[in-house]
Length: 243
Length: 243
DNA sequence: CGCCGATTTGACTCAGATCAAGGTTTGTGG
DNA sequence: CCACAAACCTTGATCTGAGTCAAATCGGCG
Image (tube, rainbow over all chains, first blue to last red; front, side, top):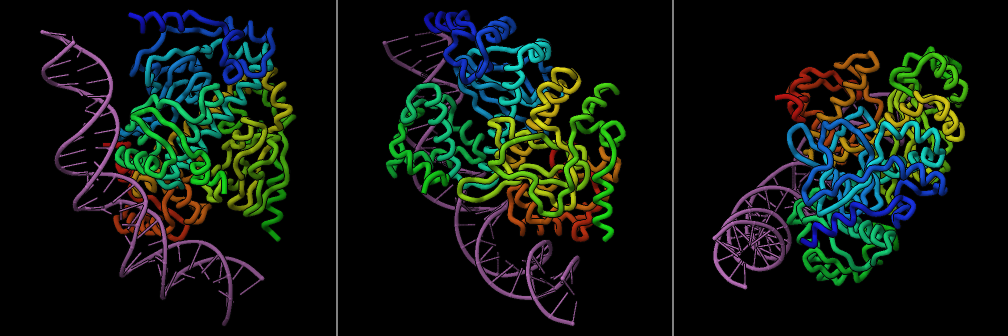
């Protein structure tokens, strides 16, 4: 089975030093020496299949994580059972910081497709941070960015119309594609409409209708999960980034 | 003017070691030696008056902050001008972590009333973390908690009805009052209705109507900003914390 | 006391939810 | 390779929670 083989190759490959995601990931801003040290403690567990959980709400936090390939969603659960997706994590992005609070995760992490991650074990993190100033600095940066991302989503959920939310989502996707040296104008969404809707705090039907409306307006082209952005400026104007 | 005098006394007082907020604040879990070291680098700038900004969106991040007295709100701004309040910070609570991301704050911090803060300068934080393992651990805890708090608010904004939002807000206030050894059942809100509404992602009128409705139902008693909780369990049931 | 901002209350409206139904894609076992 | 079930997605019709608009009323302060 060719899928399985590809995953196994993924699994075996590259140190941080050779990883082409290194500037987006833990290693950002570190020198070669620091990279070797970092590499020594990073685990590469076996890949996740679609819908596999990496951790559950309530699990002991043992590591923080970076996406190597695929896409991971994280979601919180409310006491009365509904869920809010708080992030879609693309290759090079870090997650699992919620576990730092009380030593237990307070959200779930699930693979949206076949995905692999790198683990930085928490028990080694403390001493490593003492030895590698670069890592300590990077840890602060990572956390700060997480907070900024959360604030951006709070603004979206608290103040934006459904239309603005979807525009904002598409722009965010596009930007992150570009950072990974893929096309900013054409990409595949890895998540179902339901997940987009949940993330944006609207109903699935609303997402579906808005995709149709954007397509009518020649802002984007939609073919199931394949998105082509035809009028980036129009999207930016929708969220106030341009006038 | 007696107000001014009280503020000045506030300003001069107590090292971390003597501060009765220490278990909620930076010092949590540190030993006496660590406390002395911590104390040496903590600044106590002059107090803020109501509506003073501690920092603005875009300011260089020079420190992280703890509330000593009063109440500080933090809010993000969208490109098109509207604001989302992302936190109300009570004595002993920490804020300003958004500045760690890119070295610049991405939100505003404003005093809701006369307030004083402690500052932990970022340039001293790095070396201090290397020397004090307790502080490094606490930093991670603080950040984790911030992420958890943000996720809780995301769930509120994404999935809850207006009624559930207000119930959740009142319970959160009550809990934090209790942590500070004040009454969990009777307290003053420091923020105007407008700020509560903004924070909860609803209109002011909705907040006003819900306060009236809760009062009618004998769940709380409202007298302008003075709140008495009469039926805590009812509030908990509303947010699914009890059944 | 008089003013201005904060809060409340009522009447009306609407963006987006819900309900319902049909179409399409994906995966699976025979 | 096909048949069939299960997800997933779209579209239309209707409903409603909360927003908006407008108008008192309250409350604190100079």
